[in-house]
Amino acid sequence: MVEVNKTFRERLIDFTGYCRERQFVLGPQETQDAFIIAEKGYVLDRRLFQYSLKAIYCKRKEHFDRFDEMFDRFWSRHYEEKLEQRKKKLQQIKKEPDTASVIFLGTKFQVPKKEKEQEAKETKGANESIRLRQTDFSKVAIADKEKLEELAEELFHQMSMRFKRRLENANKGSINIRKTIRKSISKGGWMLDLAHFKKRKEKRKVVFILDVSGSMDTYSYYLLRYVMVLKKYFKSLEFFTFSTYLTHVTPLLRANNEQQILKQIGKNVHSWSSGTKIGESLTEFLASYGSKFLSQKHIVVVLSDGLETGSVTQLREAVRTIRRKCKTLVWLNPLKGMKGYQPIQKGMVNVMPHLDAFESAHNLDSLLKLEKLLMDV
Picture (spheres, rainbow, N blue to C red):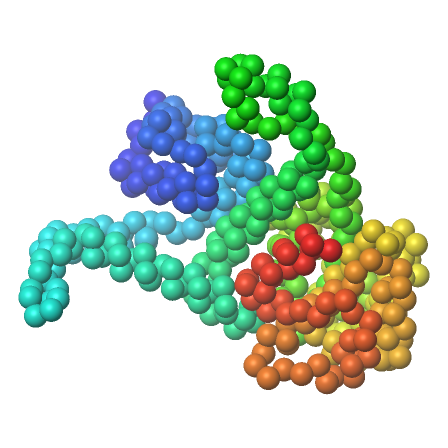
């Protein structure tokens, strides 16, 4: 048996709360089981401890898909400092009175201190979430990056659940009367659950082409995170990056762990944060992959600011050809999120007539709006 100190127990309780905030169904029993495996010595081996917690905490497939990344993110932090801060706050609360006075219509009332602090905490948390959702990715302060990462993870996960439900509902056809009657027998004849014929609806096919030049790499990173969440909901999802030349990144998305995917992309995409040649890159896409990944069943999403350094004529012809060969062409431009922006750059002027949708992708809110666009086309 291994003696587990109080600090580690608090950290483990914090991790349980961290998972619960992300829709994991956990209670006191799971926390107690986590204490037991820690005391048995599993905690001495990081991977063994991780897999043991995964077996206890994960009850659904989506939990298994997310757990490893959440574990690495949480346990790599410097929680000793945060726990020390929490102890100081607890000592401060003990010294302060349990009630706080408020004045309403000229009369003084005593409000429980804990309720007041909880309300202030919830309000502050909500306001911070709204602020981060609306902050341009390129303007996020260093101190906010970790919070933005966690918020993006949670919002993208919620979005993936909505995608899943919509696809399930889309596969429901007309009511199957015979099966409904059979199901009602076990419920005393009450038709509480309607059975439906399954309607085969083909999953969408989508191609993402991301500009990863110096002016775009921050935006491309978050759209990459977005793509990794959505990849399992499309029959075919192809992913390309470009700056001065095109790179087919789809094979690197096959790993289940998000951190591994990001590391692989970092090793293999050598043109990240370099110059921009949009027309040449899209022409290369057409020549090498157009016959395979373009059809009237494909949605093509291009992320770029349109600041072309090459031939705008070549860019215009490439975009026009892509539009002719695909079902829907969407262009995401982070500059559109800037106040007073007008698409007057030569690159954008030449591509605008051939687009089905021209949207922004500069913050979390703008990325979440793509959900409706991708589901409705």
